[in-house]
Amino acid sequence: MMIHIKVPATSANMGPGFDSIGVALTLYNHIWVEEIEEGLQIDIKRKQPIPIPTDESNLIYRTMCHFYHEKGIPVPGIHLVQEDFIPMVRGLGSSAACIVGGLVAANELAGRPCDKEELAQMAAKLEGHPDNSSPAIFGNMVVGAMDEKHLRHICMKLPEDLVFAIMVPDFPVSTEKSRAVLPDVYTRADVVYNVSRAALLVASVAEGNNENLAMAMEDKIHQPYRKTLIPHMDEIFAKAKEAGALACYLSGAGSTLMAMITDENAEVFQEQMSSYFKGIPNHWEITLLKPDNEGATAVKE
Image 1 (spheres, rainbow, N blue to C red):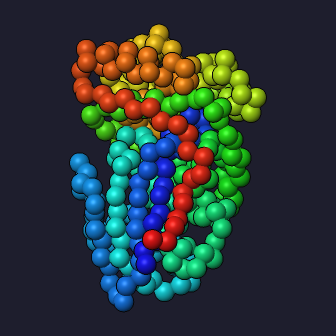
Image 2 (image 1 turned 45 degrees about the vertical axis):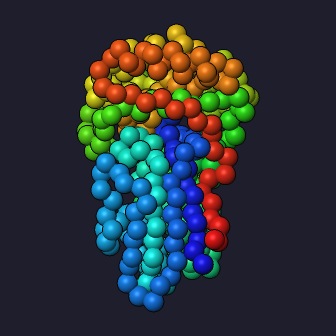
């Protein structure tokens, strides 16, 4: 009997929430796992532009081994089946999905010695920040902060009519390259700018106030620097707001751009942006997603 793990895509660095605020979305990677007598067998069900390793360097398997070592459990023989639908190197949490999937898989095979809270602590330490891994585990929008030992977080349910339009280009932006363009020092004015908007974002979501999102999603910490890596980013954001977006932001480290819209104008927004993308360089795909409210799940099949 195999265990089926489903892990949602995530959109991190939400507006001013650099390395601290992320949301789970209804797009998923799937993992099937079972113990075998010995060794490692990995099957890839869906071919990716970037080849997925089928040996011990596979990220899911490496994370499973980390879990077993942390818990003092011998690593068993593993048969792993991987089917990825989250685009790789596009700022939608594909690496975090593998890390979370590996932790959940190992935890299930080991008889669930850890609850979701413990898994979230492990995942955040492996990732170095919680804004992808925590929403992948818990679902919804998650606000998190870390120190040397602990992750603290709050899950926040988003308004039911909110839709995330993911606009994915045909070029990647690596996390390493995206972090390299960031400055080491910020002005007091820019720090205050982001702190005020991050606070406004959390309060607005808590109150269900969509009218504040345009200002609440503004940022001066990472987006002004990373837009040099995304051709036409400002122009795309301006067009998206003309088409009815409540707010726009760079998802994760990029290259995906995100627009927050409502059910009411989703169809018109998709039509207008699809038409617009035909007239600019690169190939862009737009997909409408809802927030995922469950996070990672595991069932026996």
